[in-house]
Image (cartoon, rainbow, N blue to C red; front, side, top):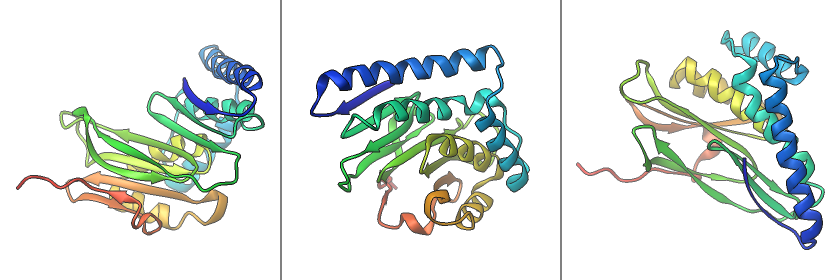
Length: 206
């Protein structure tokens, strides 16, 4: 995990960053040894009931680890951006509305963006496939309040295809349970209505 964090008390922040890294390593160790993690099992059941998609605990562990790291940082950091393998979690304890623009990488070339979306707190995770792999969806990006939800729903909605993914996300609810989606397939780049004016799509040469 990489982290960029800001706080007035740098000594406390350094200790919190160390604790955040330790929590990620602990989750990795628990998953490696197949220890039961109740939050992962609960999310897996919910996904299966809502979408019919089955996920494995190890595929969700990174999201849970980011959330645990955030618990260590949030009381100390004014703001922090955590990144675990391209899965982002933005912490802002200052009360200010802060925006971060996050690119949606092309799976064929990570230096090229299929688009970008404005992150206003919470977590963002993209699931994608290269053109050589079979499947109707090229990329699904999910924004959610917490990292575990973002990771779980990116996996499930990627398996469903863009039409179903956008419909499921639109009916998922509001407030803390809401999820937002940017989906890329042969029809182009599409997103849920709540992301209007927050998604940027680069112009393509004719």
